Length: 392
Image 1 (tube, rainbow, N blue to C red):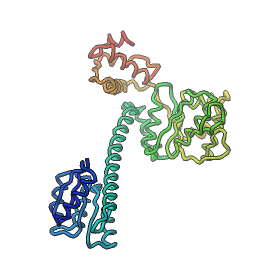
Image 2 (image 1 turned 90 degrees about the horizontal axis):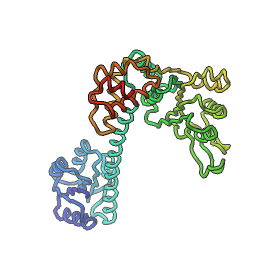
Image 3 (image 1 turned 45 degrees about the vertical axis):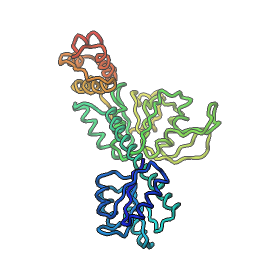
Image 4 (image 1 turned 135 degrees about the vertical axis):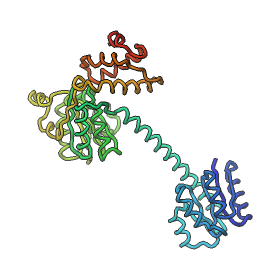
């Protein structure tokens, strides 16, 4: 239900305008003010969706009211109405923030059209603000999901490199064993980059069959192969102006490697089944648990692509090399898991934490998270060394 304020010094005109609005929509809630001073007080008390405002009024005229309100409520639509209108006055009001200007006596169709449009704009602004708020909440959740937790020297060294490389467009090759958090490093680089407002598109090269990887990366045209029932954008196109993260890049086929190299050299992609080229502006981050130099010797990875991808090479340490971070990681995962399950975080006793620190952690941080979740579900509160020995 829209709440509308009519500001007009002539009572007869106020009544006519109010009746017009209520005839248009009986659910409208319409208030009246006889001058700008009274209107300013009402606008300060109530949340109006629209103001119909005369210009020539005693005490405070319409232009003065408009100027005053726009300071605190710049999105509140004003429709200015005047019997002494000129083009100059109309333009001046629009410049100061008015939604529309109508001359007296107002044309009924013109007035109602302006009212509808103004309310539509107000609703759109409200929806955009709501979506913006939701996106900020989602962004905070995403940031928390990919938070790099720890204060060890090895992790601090990585954070320093990230801070230096993130604002550039340099390609980064992230290496390290499985489960060490290479994906977290990639997200951190993207979120601190100048491309953070644009998407980060992820491709797990190991999870896509070799015969489909080129279609996934570069897109395809309808009918280019069996199952291609429509045109499809590739990941490079989807990441335009943003970041493309090639996870497990060491598992990419040699054919796809050659095409990726060409994209990095020329900044253009060709969809499967098409001869035309599409320009793309993409920052590429890559990650692998393989030794790419050994892969090059074996003929499984292109040396020229390796040098293109590894302008900066960043190795993520295994958990056994940063065991001092385990207490903070346990606390971090405990909070996240508790939120997911709708419970309070479970406490881990000091001895239990020491026991966990002494384990090998061949699966690194990924394994630690799984163990923390298992202990939260099966262990006591607080978690004891006996729980760790029993369930790990």
